[in-house]
Length: 209
Image (tube, rainbow, N blue to C red; front, side, top):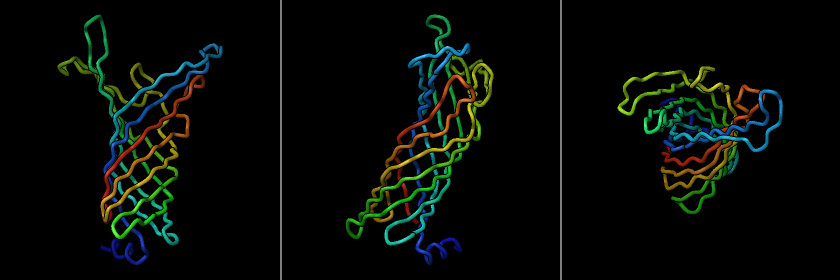
């Protein structure tokens, strides 16, 4: 109740949203372990992604505002890996992250009910953890590894990332639809011979309180 009272008196608003946010990890290997340079050697890992979150939008002047928030994100990959000939095993990865976006935005009122709001800004992200499961097709004989790690199945990545993101939101009264793109600026790879960056589009539904 106190937060709602303050929001009303300083011309600020809460927005809660649920988004679909696939993510691609792109690794570029620029030299081999002996230091010899390589050209165009890269690989991509694609994850399904979802997040829920809330932002608090402060009105700075006229229709210009800044939104600060937090969100919980889940990246997931599920595929079959061949072992010997037709024999396959399931490879399931789950990664959980916490994001803090800070977005400069400008609302353009089309009429009384409709509004378009472009937004742009940075987003700090931290990998909370996750797991990698290798099992048979019927989910038996499962072996589980932590997502972060230097073992055979884990990823030797840094947990902290910084994104640049931008997009646009279309609002009808208290409901809004957002689409945008984000790109991970920091290199997540701990190895000196390669770099790994993340990127992806997102689309979400929100409700303004």
